[in-house]
Image 1 (cartoon, rainbow, N blue to C red):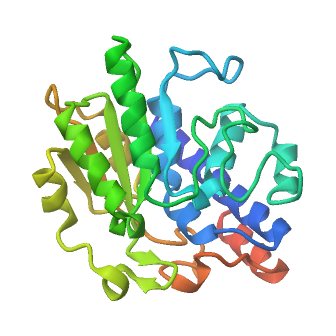
Image 2 (image 1 turned 60 degrees about the vertical axis):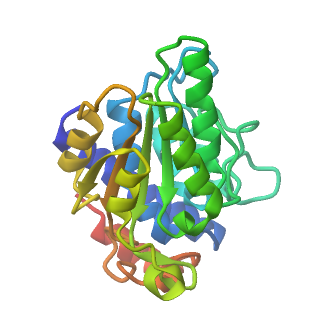
Amino acid sequence: MNTAELTKVCRQVRRDIINMTANAGSGHPGGSLSAVELMTGTFFTQMRVDPKNPKNPDRDRFVLSKGHAAPCYYAVLAEMGFIDRSEFKNFRQLHSILQGHPDAKKVPGVDASTGSLGQGCSIAVGMALGAKHLKKDTKVYVLVGDGECQEGQIWESFMAAANFKLDNLTVMIDNNGLQIDGTNDEVMSLGDLCAKMKAFGFEVIELSDGNDAAAVMAALNAKTPAGKPKCILAHTVKGKGVSFMENQVGWHGKAPNEEQRQQALKELED
């Protein structure tokens, strides 16, 4: 897939995020919109997966550690053919397979049930370590939020990844600078995240624009030294693609009303 094709898919994913959250009247559009290029690029250009055989034991794995960005996840899975788009109208509804956080027991293509922040990277490390133990060439990708990096368990998993030389693991940090209660710096400063990841033993690729499809593809394709896990530290924009949502902390967990939906969709037209 080339950059133009990936960009087109990303635009549709953003439209789906808006529609899902607007239909439900709830959800997390801001952090879903910031993660679009990272998640779409991973599934469409890297992962060995088959929608017709979603439980293939030899497939690559993806873990959405920031599970509240489920609308982005579902939109990507639908674009890939894992789920039918008709399910979108049931997002966050009772008995729907598409709950507010991803459920691996219900949603084809979801490898881990997540939502309790800080735990997803540990799950991914376990998957990558298991693949090494079984001598499989499985690749594992995990998307982590920057606010989530305030959790202690995240750093334990980072240490484990380096200790066990998990060069089959890629950690993507969606560094949009905002979390539910304000900016990261206001809540708990992360300091020099790039330097920290290097100190923890990762091969770090820092992207000044993590919403640039070409840059994301290049980072995903970049080769890293044997025995070192990869970190893509992507500086993104919360609410990316919708002018009134961009860099606005209030859109962390608030759905657009009908007027806002129509404005957002208009902005996301070709």
